[in-house]
Image 1 (spheres, rainbow, N blue to C red):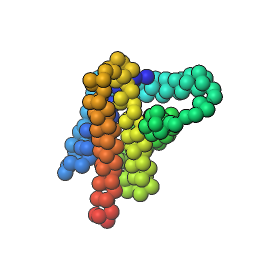
Image 2: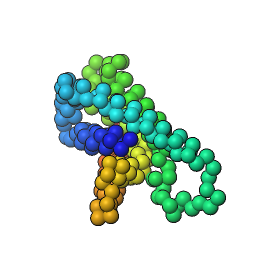
Image 3: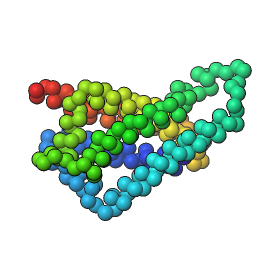
Image 4: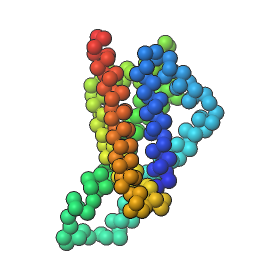
Amino acid sequence: MALSGLFLIIFLVTHLVINSFTLAPSKELFNDAAHFMATNPVIYLMQYVLALGFIIHIGMGIKLTLQNRKARPKSYAYNQPSKNADLSSRSMIISGGLVIVFLILHLRDYFYEIKFVGLPSGTTDYDLVVNLFSSPIYTGVYVISFIVLGFHLNHGFKSAFQSVGANHKKYNPAIKIAGTAYSILISVGFSTIAVVHFINQYSFN
């Protein structure tokens, strides 16, 4: 669970960097990056590794949740969850489930369209990405999804490092700060890209 989570954490940073290219003055920067990602044999192979990483992470998350519930089928008679764990920790299975729903929609809108349907003549990868943000509903769902992902990452980042043995009172505060900073970076970064494209399209129109 921890190793697949750390792998996906690295992927998200890479994905954010590439998506930020859509904000460049020339759309060719993003199109060239997308072409490289689609044609480079090493990266092409990594998409299957990435898919496996998602499957393992989701599967292990469900398994651990069921094991925890089986270990204690009855709730504590006296429980103050807000004092025992933060919101992101208590809502991991919920935030994870919402992220899965968004992931399915995301794959349908991008991966499926490019790989199986094909883009209309004259349409580039950049056009596909930017045009989706012309919809206020899509943009809103996109932003909310990354806010939810931020909550998921805030606890997941810290938990992953602790699970692999990086759990020491000397380093834990730094790991906690890094996890919070990372989750904010991902949430704000992806959301900003979506909102900027939404605003730009309405400004030009």
